[in-house]
Image 1 (cartoon, rainbow, N blue to C red):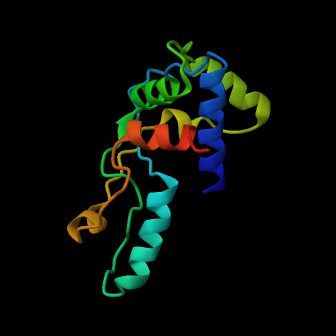
Image 2: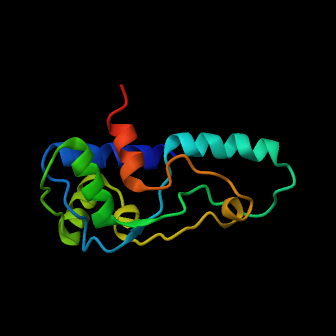
Length: 137
């Protein structure tokens, strides 16, 4: 979870600096969840002991990277963000000794068990979630 939190902070920083365009081709899917829904999911699990199986704690609406970055830019008040091509991300990853997999690989994970058991998300839409996080007092 710490790595994902660092990624979100990095996306926000990129957007504020004007470099918050799509990453790679921008078509890769991103499964995400608002921090309050993640906490709510944990509490829900304690109350529903009969639920079993692999539980995906993600929003029911994954988005493409270009949509995610646009939502972050909009919440930051940035009309435009310079895109980062895959080769540039690979170069940067090589310098800092990491992989670009989290940024460039598509992830379309759905919360089937949560949805089947009528879990109610407070932030199912990316725009609402990002606005809440960016504009928290």
